[in-house]
Image 1 (tube, rainbow, N blue to C red):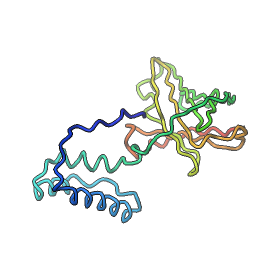
Image 2: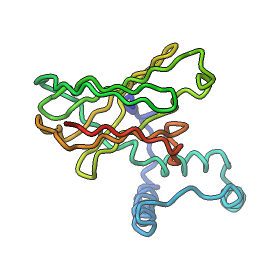
Image 3: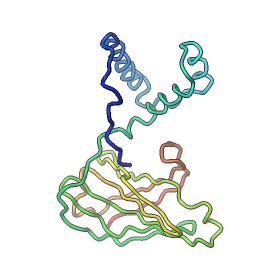
Amino acid sequence: MKRMPYIRPTEHYDQQIIEIDEQICALIKQRKERSDNNPGFPPFEYISDWAGKFELYEDFLKSVFGTLFNEEHFKPMVEPTDFKKHIAVLQSIEADEFFYTLTSIRQYSNASVITLSIDWDITSELYANKPNHFELYIDKSYDCRMTNGGSSSGHAAYNYVVSPPLADDNSGIKLEFREFSPPLKKDGTGTEIVFKLE
């Protein structure tokens, strides 16, 4: 999702702690390298122990480790510029009473934008289990981010920015939409909707 610019909360900074702050940054880098950038999240009993040992608030430590867990969400996002054209896709998939549709890809000079539409029958028993959150995967050479979306009774639509832009002739490319429960959780529901472009 798009983030608001971070505003420095105060002009004050105690220069006596600059070396400590630099060490914190070095330790974060070391943590990423040792865990192969997949650290997980510490058990709450560890956090409770560390809070007592270092005189810190448990919820503060949970927030710190939660931010570290979701570091990729802070990666700078490409803003699409210089619209070129629409590329027709016109594909749909029906799964578990949900109807998934891709109509077109918007091409920009620096990115592509893909909109996933989802429709369902609001009288169905599955209405209570309407879609959670979908993330788009193509392959390692593309960065895919959901920028915005919304839903109303029986319909949802989500926009994804893909960079670098897809080729105008994107035949054979697979767009995999993987469902997750809350947006920031890494455990998927197992639902995958795959469109193969032709």
